[in-house]
Amino acid sequence: MRKIRYNLLERGASVRDVIDSVVARGPHDVPVHILNLDDVVEKHRNWHHQLSRVEPFYAVKCNDDPAILRTLISLGVGFDCASKQEIEKILKLGASPTKIIFAHTAKSMDSIDYAKSCSIDLMTFDGEFELDKIKQLHADALLVLRIRYDSCNAQISLGKKFGCDPDQEAPQLLKYAKTLGLEVVGVSFHVGSGSEDHECFQGAIKCARRLFDFAHTIGYHFHLLDIGGGFPGDHNKPIDSYAKTINLALQRFFPLKLNVRIIAEPGRYYVASAVTLITNVQSKRIVRNSQGDITDIMYYLNDGLFGSFDWLNPRQHPPEIIPGNHQIVRSQTGRFSSTLWGPTCDSTDLICSGMMLEELRIGDFLVFDNMGAYGITLATNFNGFAKPKVLTYISRAAWEKLKLDKHGKSLKRSAPVVASNNWNSAD
Ligand code: PLP
Image 1 (cartoon, rainbow, N blue to C red):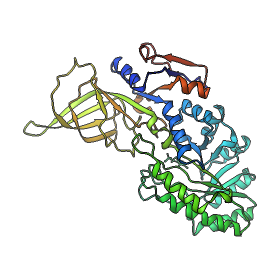
Image 2 (cartoon, helix red, strand yellow):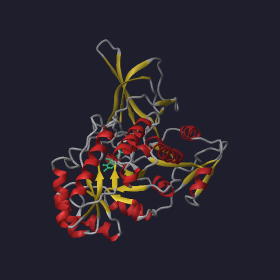
Image 3 (tube, rainbow, N blue to C red):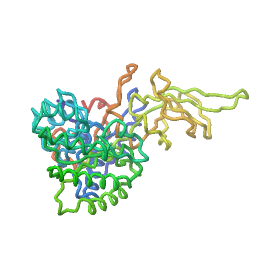
Image 4 (spheres, rainbow, N blue to C red):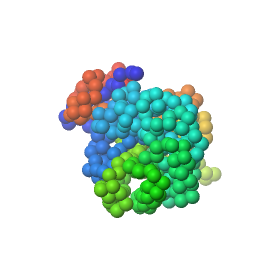
């Protein structure tokens, strides 16, 4: 595995300085992700403050950047892995097998085998065929029954694909697991990713408690509740209301005296706000009506839906615009309805349309914040376009505290934050 390169922010230097420095270098073909690990550390502190009973198991699928994973390992966070490859990656980085839940309910035979060989015992299921496979390949596994409980307002609803019906199917499945002699230890759910509905956690936790009670009647003694992901992670979206609902529901349905371990699988929460994307305008076209009035300006950026942009996360807020090199095209004043396209030849590669923006020029920079979730892990090289380049930053104080690595490059406020020959510094 390659060494992780951390750029150290000395006292007084900020991510803003980094952005200014990247922009000062002029337009570049490859979009840039500024990854701020201090943001991840702060998110973890906040999680503990707000949800002290709930152990986070970060969902690796959300952003598997090694620097993020190393930081989370140092912070003592656990991991939700969905595949053999994710397990392999996190183990190589130093995670303990006891801090991993294999949270995919439809696992390949090979991956179950692999999990067993690495002593990863905790895994989810939602159907009888999965139970048969686990009985055959990892009979000592500690199983978590995934039930369906959907938020009514999620960006990505998962219930159609995963999770059994808690009333009809779950009791039957538990009875079947019992006949196979398998060890079921608890219940999990995922209300949906990007859920705006914090109250659904109350219903889901209540529903899980009913299954704990049922399991008891057939001889199981559940001791684990996994409340999944679905927490917001943008700068302007706090988790306070989620924490309040969850804490109250836990107090009511899983009081401390029951001695139930509570875990969660947050993805977005930990990383969305840690990444800022810097992209630039590579081409543009002006669209006019028959009277010659401008009806739209189309911009072609060097990043799009096959790169950093989440397919299901429409851009509602205008990006920050930083003027670039303006020798190329004339400028007009005023705002125009604008369309932002990604660079590929696919016409679905549309970031947003109808956004009112000042006229941009070739080489102008567009800076998007909250780009850390489900961007880089979904990015492709379609049409040969490079995936975004990640530049990783951490304050010296946090770096020393976490004892991340000896491979740090010091950056002071007065120095250029990204050195001129440093585009490959993260390699
Ligand atoms: N756990 C599972 C099983 C998932 O499928 C997902 C996302 O799809 C997550 C956790 C992370 O969800 P989020 O990013 O909404 O927190």
